[in-house]
Image (cartoon, rainbow, N blue to C red; front, side, top):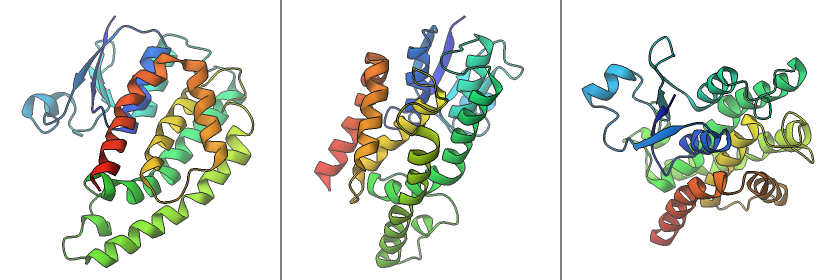
Length: 229
């Protein structure tokens, strides 16, 4: 059964699922959703108008979104033990890492990187407030960038340590999500910690072209953005 993936190539949220589908060796088809997410056709299937999103005929609604939920669903369906082990303790680490990333780390990354990449901010944030001055927006972006160090240290000392999240010999879905997310930090002024670089390299070395090929879209977009700024 082929999974139809709606994705945006420059996005690290989308990158996670693109890497996962390749690493899982599942049949899939990718469609660039740029300019399509607010169309009636798209919203009839995915009312949240978000990517990544998949269409899958076995799903009770026929489609779903959210990168971690997509990976969890497909890994459970296809019993992908290497990527999402059923052992309760190892799975607990993986789930906790993904929830901590989406709830605590990624909001800071979005606030610090989106303004530089031209992505829209979330409603209620300084970057999305037209009345806010350029100085206030810059101050808010810098504050978010500075705050990233704390959750990164949590990932280093608690989740990752010297291996992979879930304590397995190969990357789990949480490693795919974290490594993909860290790609965006190349746009910031703060240098990426050495352990993060080593970690991304470790994940990429294990996954090979399954990681490198889709990551090239994100890396190319960041390089082009930095060159233009």
